[in-house]
Image 1 (spheres, helix red, strand yellow):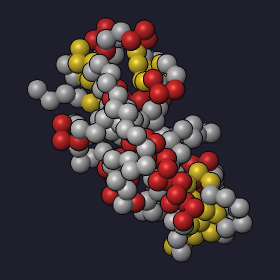
Image 2 (spheres, rainbow, N blue to C red; image 1 turned 90 degrees about the vertical axis):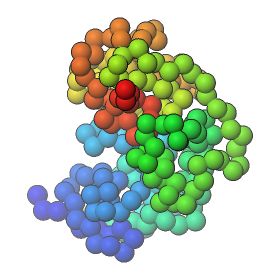
Image 3 (cartoon, protein in one colour; image 1 turned 180 degrees about the vertical axis):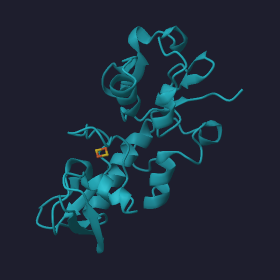
Image 4 (cartoon, helix red, strand yellow; image 1 turned 45 degrees about the vertical axis):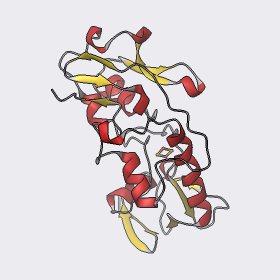
Length: 214
Ligand code: FES
């Protein structure tokens, strides 16, 4: 089928029918903050609430990962309303994120740093009290570590482990502010059936799952 043609911030973009607006934008080199969207996951989880855009004809901003491209749609990635929503979502995330970038294995390749840089947002929330998490770090496996204090609950590791590797070792545990990524019954990574797999570390956008350096 022929491509869908539309515009993002005045730039003409082409994408295959059915493509999510978020990934069409990213593929066209237009940055939209995002953490939880997965290309092959439809519908998206929509958990991070960062990927807001305005679409002409819609009364309110919408998460771009929840939209598919339409012919002649007119999309704006920045507006006062979009910026307010992105800022609010980012501040919420950062208010419960341990900010120790210099010690973090994801320093300089972290999605949170990318978003802060692109949208000129402070990494330290200005309007919310900071609640620094203090979960234990799992260093039981030499080739893979889990630091829940850096986790943004995007769910990418769960998707890879469950849907691609077919192991189902990682899952969300607990509720509310206590929600973490965990193994079953919080057993150490070294006791899981991971083999040599470290693919969850490949998709972690922050420094929560990583390969420790010796
Ligand atoms: Fe759209 Fe997370 S990427 S809600």
